[in-house]
Image (tube, rainbow, N blue to C red; front, side, top):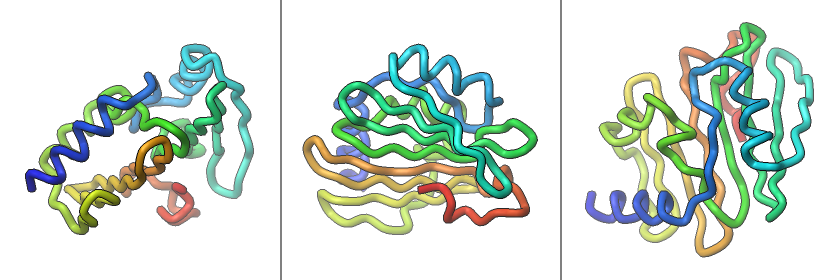
Length: 147
């Protein structure tokens, strides 16, 4: 248990700011792109829209938006982990209270709670992860789209 908290603290300390909030509406995506100073591209997919923000350092933040306009999942890949408090919003408590389903020492952590899934892995300057809310995932897609 202690190892998981150490990993989460390390991820949070080596983070870049993010403002998208899991479970919030699509308007948060535009404010993220502006706050990051990154390039924002929206790619329509079957059953959802993928909003991809590429930061100047190459970090990519993906935000998955349902047809109803709700962010149902987020993912990241790059040199840094986004600020998880800001990225997850109120779901940060789900992360803190979630049941660990898998931990690979110094590499990866997967936490699953009530209606919340989080996984993150990586090492110095190479991180990736995702978080999603199963009840917000559109019926026409599967949670595996959040990559």
